[in-house]
Length: 282
Image (cartoon, rainbow, N blue to C red; front, top):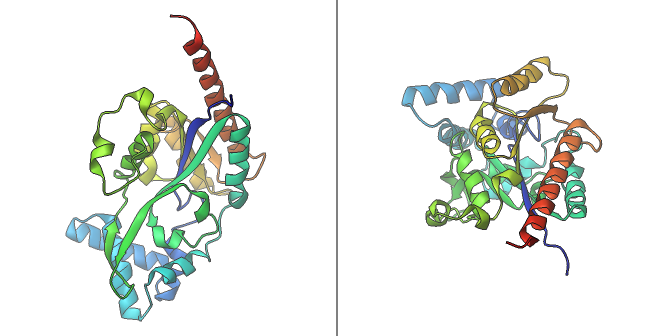
């Protein structure tokens, strides 16, 4: 009888984790004639002025500025802008390579995005098809197919909700019952100790801590050759928020590759030991 595969999930932030900067900065902001500095300064100002959620503010501002500039905001317009995003080294080959490695260890690996960025822009990236689930901020589109209103805003605290959805297999966002229902640890879809969370910034801190405290692995990545980014990531270690840091280089044989493969090995070994104990006579 073939051995049952062990479920495992790697959850990722996007901006600064899989690609440099915020995804809106690559094409959308140039299209509406704004610099990144000007756009985010206005977002911060409006957030403070209205005591609002920053993600909702930036999404609203995107639509207002696009309308003023005569820039189209249909679903496919966003998707086309995602195609211009340059990913960090090794990202495009990372998912298939790790899936193959995990399978060789009898581990069923899935990849999930948990991002405050736009799901519609992410859909245009070269890696969108590699993700089993995408939890990112997204718009409601009207009967003309034009973005009209935020449908989902993913901020630094709501990000943790999606880790519980992974944990319980509750992926229908309209269903709040399943994610809040009591489920025995042994019956959960993906145990927290079988999760890795990879992120880069302050919006990832709640996820870092949740996964770390629940027995999973939290990794802070930083842009290569950026002394400031490296120091920031190291600060998460000293603060007890992550287990380790690595450059955002996803190439085979790199530091991050070795860290994740070692965790896959550990999960496979633990599952093998648990299976042996389960066979022992009571």
